[in-house]
Image (tube, rainbow, N blue to C red):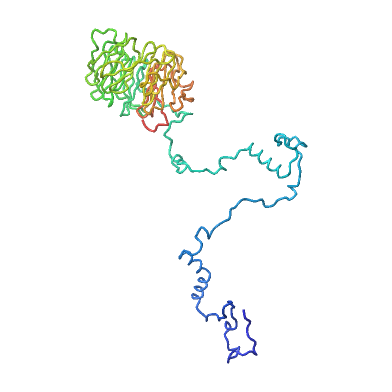
Length: 479
């Protein structure tokens, strides 16, 4: 800045007193000296100042000149260095044998003496060996798809938990119409929220299933016909088939609420209708002396009687053209309804007699008179007939009476009617029994029937005291 002129210096024809104040000073730009612009209004001065301060930077952003955005805002995060280092630390020598706490730092036959730097490195390695780097401090190499979204945090898992099964007690299904005898059958309708209870009371009772009111809908009595087995027909459940140790069986039409007596096979006294299995085309009754009678599921007339070399105790339909029977000797037979001949035979591992068989989309379970339930891979067993069981469930000690899968194939209910509290639920993800249910305080008594609702929301248990116990499986959202 050039200082103002003295009063004695010339101004080119004028006096200093006649000059404006801003004309008394000049700014040196190393190029030329020029007087500041004349007086302007406030807005023009602000615009000039803004242009001087930010105009150059703004033009770089607009025109793409110079460094990019990433280069304009860079924080140097290079290798971390200690703020201060002790120069004498490297010259210091430490004898590892002086103290017991340092003897563990010695490696092999090396010298006992270390420098300060070597001791520091040895201590760091020792700490890392004892205290591993925590997972939160390790940067993942690649983010997994699971961590890329919050779906698993905001939605319930669809997989059945393996450690604990959520079960809550509901009112008994038949608490409005109790039975004073054994309940042999309890089943849920495939599409409606309706279930039935049947047993030695010779009556079939229908209930609305809601877990609270369980309103009684209808009772149908069958004279001189103690019911041993009852099932809804497939796939719609328009009828109920009822069997007993009699030379005939009954059907009950849900639309008409009427029961119809159906004749059995003539001249076959060894054939009874106590136990049977169903498909959409056939009803298979298990008789003594290896007899197995198949009736049409439509008109209830006999279609074919096949015989096995041993007594048949249980059966299940694989599809419309194949079924499996099991019985004495631990043998199971795979049949074809198109030829009415067995396709293959296989022996249930370790079983003396087969007493129950169940089937799901992935597994086949076989119960024996010793209480063991073998779980097989369904496709492997039916294809090779020599597959080993995936697991042998040995939680029961008496003859297995029921082997029932739920609709998703995740749960398997196994029970025995010969010993109290003989009911277990097997989680097929882990192939282990549920540890928290049933408990010793669960009022099961002697279990004669077990069944799941269509969507596995409920499980029903028929006991020898005439109670149809109803429990809610909280993992499954609907009936």
